[in-house]
Length: 380
Image 1 (spheres, rainbow, N blue to C red):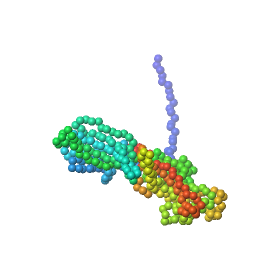
Image 2 (cartoon, one colour):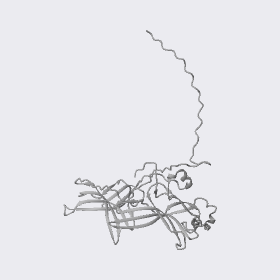
Image 3 (tube, helix red, strand yellow):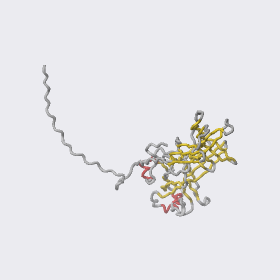
Image 4 (cartoon, helix red, strand yellow):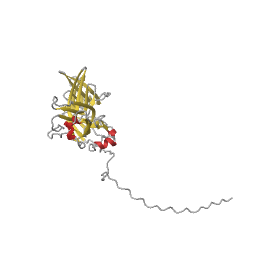
């Protein structure tokens, strides 16, 4: 039986569409009335180290790659790879070529110094009898120099040959190069830009601040300033000494009335503990600069005449902490040695017997790291 295909009516014509309007143009530049709600600042990848370090003696040449051009000391980070080559003037009678990495921590105690071996790795680069390398895997402190403690590392090339008349004994030529161990670290979250007003961000992003007020991550890179906000709440008469402007001859907000100083600064504390003895050293590594963050109250001229206990007012300052010392090592802690960092708020009467206000000092622990936050993968 022959089948007849069904008949289909022609499809209606496709509707006509008008072209879509062009996409609006976007720009990072703010127009009048616009403001930035949130911003992620991307960090450009760091340039690769393309320099070469060389150390040449009469018998041995050591070449280390992946260094900064012109560096006088090789630098390696956490899980760093030592790449290079060794050239010998003569291979006659050669028994073994060994590469050694050693680290020493020297601690100063009362009247004596104690040196501890913190790293001792040995790699046999060539041997007439095969041996397994010895590797000591443990967290290491960074290269560090202080009056209480010094941590140093050396890379040694040991070339062993038999003695001329006693072949069962070896003679060794040793080339020793000081190296710098500089493990890098960074915050887990970005820090708000220092040019954003505090009152704007504390309302829209209160989680970004931590009282003093400081950025809530409490982990800050050595390459960036640290914004903070200071608010003082007290009876009006107690706030009166703080209203005068800062004396311009001081880098700190020392009041022209010379009654009291307000100071916010960065304090580094080096602690060495050996047995039951503990030694501590403090160093100021950064200073804060304060400016009034809002207009003074209209009645601030009458603060001095208000009796104690009548009403609570507040004064607000914005500030930035800037490093005044050349700090390259972040906060760290090992068994006998720890390097701690603090943001310190200090209120100190210049004439304690005459000033009605008492001295006060608050230390808030923070962590300093070597690198800023980044949203791209970094191999260290």
